[in-house]
Image (tube, rainbow, N blue to C red):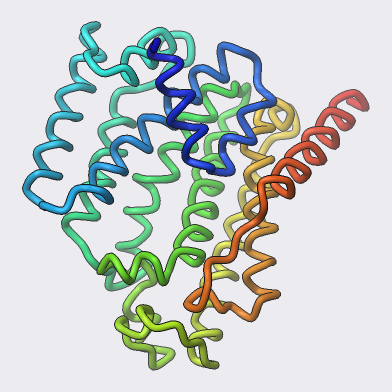
Length: 284
């Protein structure tokens, strides 16, 4: 299996909405973004699938060393070997990969976050940084596109946090800020139960509204000249905003079941968004 095939298989197995957005890219950009996504999945799995914290920390340290080897021109892992040809063409800075690993380590350092300021650092490292790297791969002409990428990453991560609140709680992690739980009279251990009441709905609605503000801010920040180039991100935004609407329409019952979109719906949203962007591009 070649390094590119390794990354493609890892991306396909994940079932993530990101995979649908990648299909509308040129070959070189698609290979680069697939390798980036595979890297994110790999280091995320270190934390989620390693039961011993000391082992997880050791593995993350290995990845720090592997990023150093990557930028020294001697990568060992299939993912970093797949990434190597794209570093210079797409100006992928090493510091961003280090930030992503630091974000994964925060899952070992924190099992909850006292306030949104602290949570924002986590979201920046595991999502906004990925958005910025992705913007480089997709291509941009104006610096405002990087602000868009930052805020879209925040929006996507906040949506994930709301969708996965029960699943994360069962792993002993709470990503909704503790001061906001206290405001609504909610205890962290309640997220492990399959029961939703008005307190939870009010708390979750507040999280959804914050995510929507980030989607709106990102949309406003994206320069018109870069909209078509950034189409994978806009496809992701369309899919995830639809997911956020589904959660709201379901009464924020994320503790009772996992709200999701079917692969067919994701593909339909992706295709519809792509067609709209292509039509807008033709109109100038």
